[in-house]
Length: 160
Image 1: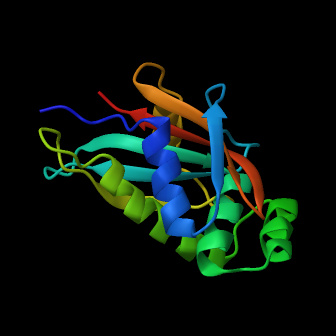
Image 2 (image 1 turned 90 degrees about the horizontal axis):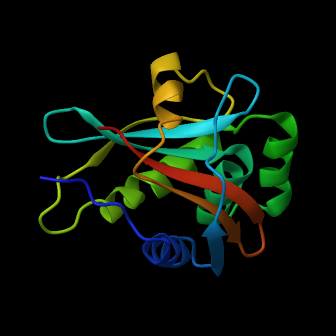
């Protein structure tokens, strides 16, 4: 079995439908979360609980996606960006976005993946997870602009 790498169109369509907003996106340089770069990292596992994929999102995307799904005013999402961490509400909302995003991986003839855990921006990301997010190879790196909120970075990374 293999893991399905979603296309940018699949990502745009899912986010647009889920958030109920226009979503624009395009290719970006690989996003590299680090000790001084707040990032949310979602860990996806297969049925044997092996880590198969990660989604790393910068703080702006994390706040804007969490805000858009929960109808949090833009000012609330921008305040989280300014403070360098997601609020508990934005983190819970982002979890829902990234949980639904697991459907991007689950296509016929591919391994079934599910969201195992989310390390929200502002919280400590375990060093092995942060290092795995830096993996080059099978990945999709995008900038994503959520209408009415703003632009951020998102990387889908496969773990061999």
